[in-house]
Length: 438
Image 1: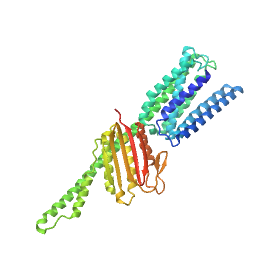
Image 2: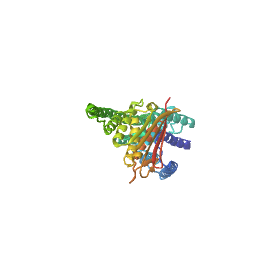
Image 3: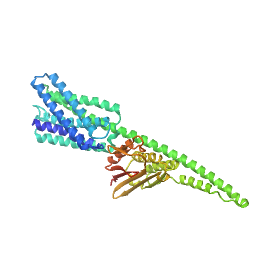
Image 4: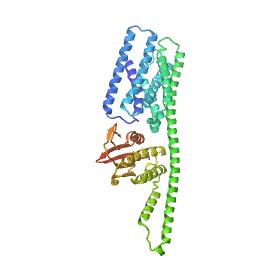
């Protein structure tokens, strides 16, 4: 029974941890990274087993036993943080987020089993002495609820948004108290404490577990609101800049039209013709004025119009064919981040090229077979080095994709899609495929 209970406790932690961590992008060499994590996990349990057995055989007192358990459980949480950080991309704060949530889920499952067992009288001898079928049923119910009420909404928010360090440090303190409640609820019966007090402590322990999960969800949700608010403000600022650009372009065209009228008035008497250079200049002004993109998606229209005007000013040809309705399920914040990073990287690469025939950025967005597809390509000079599936800059390289590409990948994968990049000669390309919700 002890072996079954121990294995179930491990699964109570690893399953919630896996449900959360797999929402993050995998690091390069994921298989051997997992192998290292498993070996570290095994060494930890062997060490704690031998250390705990040695403490029992040496007749250690109650205080030493409790302090040892605190050290073991705290080390266990830190080990899980390390496992997530080794295997998946993300900050240490993201790893702490995953580990603390999984630990709370494990405590919630184990605490629920013990609480019900004590109430029914089956766990009076010792927590974990309940029938195996009972333990499995409770664990399955808690993990299912954890997935439906916590993990599934979290996956939609995106774990990489976890950046509030102060809140996470506060959360770490709460986790420490959670560990204390966990140890107390497991040992009070053994020390002869009244069942009534044990039930109160157990109920408080379950409440702390739920509080931790609630705080973590609120932490992520509030961060999401901050990102959305910043993106909305940026979109509004872009609209104002577009208006100013359009007004200035109209004024330039009016000035050119005035010059044409002035020249035409002199035609009858002078026999002069319109200067071809003037007409070419007017044509360029008209091209700039006509550069507003209309894809049927306001968020895409804003970012693509800005980038097209930017390309015009840099002498870069922006070849764009985009069906904005293909990405109607993405928020404005996601669209701005996705296409902003994509096009900023491409423009930065081609604006350093001297050959005008290579100063081209090509973008295609369309819908096909229930999938939204994005294809971007541009010339570059130098070399492209990959790290964790993303291109990074090196000295002499003309690309600076690194962080921006990881941000794009997070957005795409959060919607069940995939994004890849590579080179074909001196052409760099990015392909993304995202399933469209029904």
